[in-house]
Length: 247
Image (tube, rainbow, N blue to C red; front, top):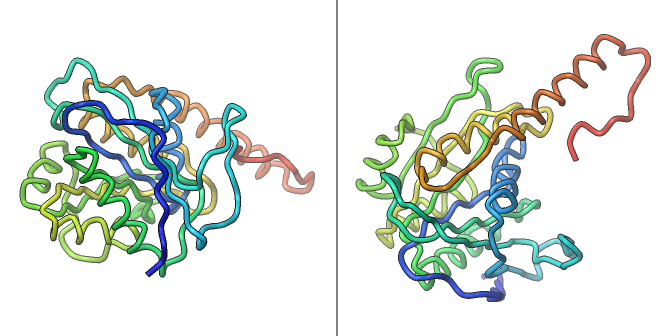
């Protein structure tokens, strides 16, 4: 078993909470989406997960060193028809943990969720496109109640197949613990970071959390800029380019 060290930086508010989890996946859509959420919603860093098995780095945000896996939280106001009212939690990181640590990372997160009043977990993942340039959403869930909720939000059920990585462990362990875990999988472009795919995932989150204001326009604008640069490079291939597509 890999040792996971969880650092608590703040406290959670009252009520039940929904957690949105994003580890790097195809097109980096899950990491882009959760990083965007933590910044756009101005969430507070409440906990972090570290391990000797993680890459040795510290992310600097606003001059402050951050742990590799970060847990942010904030209040949800004016609750509507979405998931149970309370707070919103976002788990995000830029690195993909080694496969032999996936179970330990997932269990550490589930333990923290249970100890901090998280009632439902939504994991975000990128999957290959079935049709070129068409963005689809599929989902799997841990319990019958979670599956009913997922369908209610317009997510097509993923009936047969495999959900890999930390999301897969969260799904199965969530079913064992009878915790509502939904894995939302969005198609994405594989050759470049895909902010449009990230925005497509967040459209489902907006349905789940109607009381939270999430503005996805910047992600769509960024996707349009990337397409513009790619088109310019394609039309002038002999000139070369050192432009950074995403950063």
